[in-house]
Image (cartoon, rainbow, N blue to C red; front, side, top):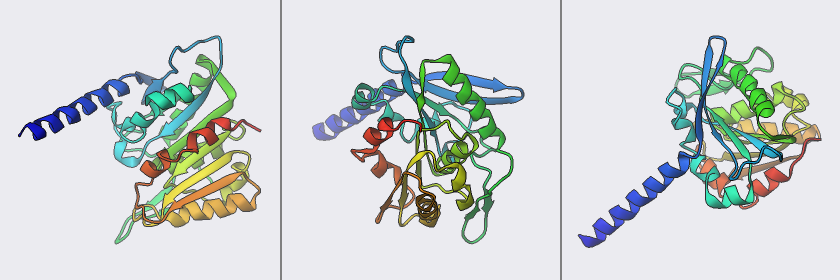
Length: 258
């Protein structure tokens, strides 16, 4: 009984510590016309407006959509707020939340016996992504951002959104890391000047790993700086393994805009 009580104590302590850490992300609302995007903003410890910091845009997956300004930190939130990351890689982190009925990418989702994704080469961005692009520019101007070190990353729907927001903003992003995402291979002409590290699980039964593999091969053929890590035993959740990669943040924060 004492052992179970002690375990429960440590679990509760860990939960409270995680909740306390996530509270370091400031809560904000960005309003643009009739569109509103909740977002969380994490500033470096001892933020100094007299120096410049990298800016990291992180896009969550479809399961974290809503308007509570909480769920977008479900995956990755605790990682980026950890003591080691904040000490070694001080940056401004922007985590917007996509409305429930919207999507970061303008991909066509085909439902049936098995869900599939048909990526569009052209077309207007979704309202959510268009609003985030405006938000990104506002944050870049409002805070002390090193414009040569702006990065993007995201998982699942956010991995798709990572490809798309980089494509729609050529010359802005120095590097990007899409996790279990995808895009139309014809768009690599607008992606090749950004450095890429793509991740996917080989057993992914939600978003086929072929989408990431196709983007990797197309970016490679276009002469882009690109890496691809395929986890042979991972299903859709490849982000835990990616966040555990010892070289990920070192690689990311060493990239500068060409």
